Image (cartoon, rainbow, N blue to C red; front, top):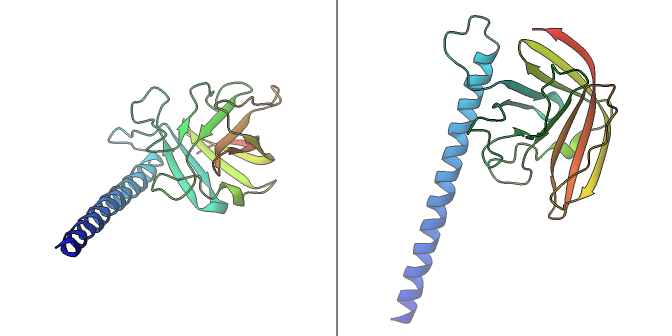
Length: 184
């Protein structure tokens, strides 16, 4: 009788686990498809419907192309997407400091899980307000995770900084400088 109860309980936990991960993976697939649709529509000149994204981040080396919501949009949520840090400038501001954060690791929302593969001089593209901003990586470093980061950058240049976790107690910071700005 005890053996039968343990088997039933084990099967129940396995079933719940499969259901949870199946639903989680299913929502990942839906999110990925929706991102692809809206990213594609972002570049259409004759926009017939409203696009929720205000910008697109593209990092070819790690095959990332992800839309970003406005800072004040309720969908701008680190648990669901990459986001502009609330203290971030937008790239059209003089000597802007654009800061984008995202999760790394293995969950479905770990869009920055390959940032560690980036190297100095790699390119990052940010599309915003019908312009393509091309940045080149100038610095990569790690800091202890403590709830805040002091960003150092040349205030006479436009910069884009990407931040993600690295393990449980560090954060990876990738700093890039604007090298080209062009109409799309």
